[in-house]
Image 1 (cartoon, rainbow, N blue to C red):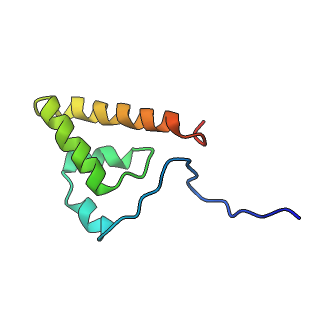
Image 2: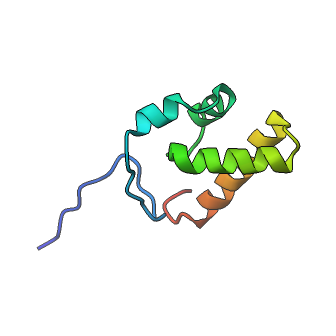
Length: 87
């Protein structure tokens, strides 16, 4: 007898984390430029983690928003390479 598995909309082999608080309220407080980048992101970033990466990258690239967005995209591509379900 085969076990049936429920298919998920977004399958990933990456570790899932439990989110605390209201993620939509946290999302609404993100900078406009970061929210625009998140709209096109392939991964479901938590507002907390993406804001931490954003701030660190902004500091590294001396406030250059476009370079910061490119950096976040590179980080995301690296994460997707580790995901065995991503083609």
